[in-house]
Image (cartoon, rainbow, N blue to C red):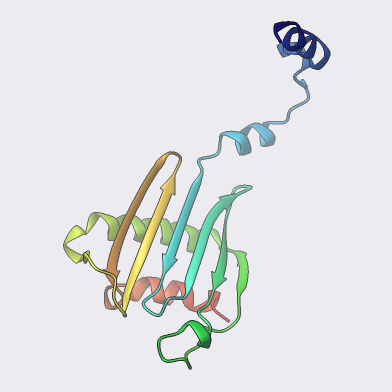
Length: 147
């Protein structure tokens, strides 16, 4: 087994000499860019996934459909995806940080009308619940992102 491993390393190469030298600064910055994701579910169960990719904050909107709603009638619309403007991205990150730090607004149980957040940055992850009535700024920000 050790002989196979040595042969494999020789064939594939394990030295730094095999690393391409024509890596651009853009490639390096994208590789070292802070990973960031935010999963948000509103009080009706519609979900947003925000994530950083290639220097921009992207979003995916996954709406609740009537078959999954508590009323059997409500629809959050159609799925949508896109990229936030820099202003929108900055506001989102800023507001999520404010809501996380305002632990007095957090609730312990998710019920109808309560929003959930799960934010991942590198290896760190935070989760919290907030009544949707506290999220006026977020609802304003997300309005153009919904269909």
